Each structure stands twice: as C-alpha cells, then as structure tokens.
Image 1 (tube, rainbow, N blue to C red):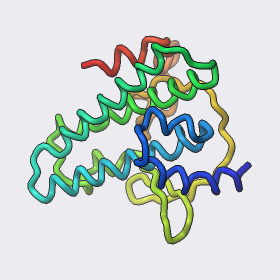
Image 2: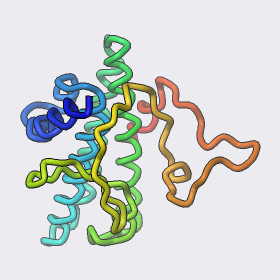
Image 3: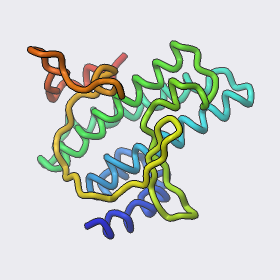
Length: 193
C-alpha cells in the first residue's frame, strides 16, 4: 500500500492542473487526492500568492481566497448531485479540509500577513512534494517530516477549527466536545460567504 501511494502522489501532483479540480478528484484514491495532493497544492498556491504579493500585486492573497471559495462551491455542486457513497465521502473530506484552508487564508488576510515567513503561515501544516527526493514532506514552523505513506482510508473528518488545529490543544476541556459533528450541510454553510 505504501509503495502504491508513493507511486501515485507524484502523478497526481503533476496532473492536478490538467483538468478542473472537481473532475480531477475522481481520478485518484481518496488518500492520494484528498489527504495529500490537495494539501500539497494548497501549500503551493498560497506560496505563489505570497510571491505575487511580494512582487507588488496587493490583491494576490485575496484573489487566491476567491479561488478557494469557487473551488468549494464547485464541490458543493457535486454534493448536491448524485454521488456514490464512497465518492460523497471523498468530496466531503475535501470540503472539510478546504474550509479549513479557506479559513487560514482569510485569517492571514485579516491579519494583513505580507510574507510567507510570517508565523501565521509558518505555523500551518504545509505539505510539499520534493521532486528531487521524490518524497512528500510535511512542514510546520522549522520542522520537516517525511510523509510515511501510511494508509488512512476514506473516512469522515471532523470539522477543523482554530481550536482543534492549535498545536497547544491537547483535547477538549472536561465535559466539552472539541467541535461539533459535521452534517451534510456543513460545507454548504461554510463555503457561501
């Protein structure tokens, strides 16, 4: 399984821009597509937006945030349609991850973050594909960890919130849940702004 995932990730990274994202997601297994490559591309696209910002294009991050909302709305359109149970789970997983990614970018806009070196961005778990080493890596702050390609399956994800995403968070306070269970409406309500 690990060898298969490691083989498919570089292909999925390369083909990501070859067709609309809402079609591309059905070309690969859930873990390759939802849990790894969409996060690799999120890291890449935010990096590109920061590059454009540093070149003087003031709206680069805002434009990327608009693109994120468009991507979420395309996924919502899929969810409204007819999908198999497995495909619906795949799309819901991506929606959950994308809502979190959109919120991170919106937070950076609100904080007027202007550099990819800002802690607000560096403190995020950022996946990247290293073409030279032919491996996926996860970075956070100054730590880099090689992705293990372990099988995680196609299971539902909890809503990711700033509270549950915090590296300081060790669990809910006694008597409280960390976050609510998502419903089939969660991405719809979260994406449309």
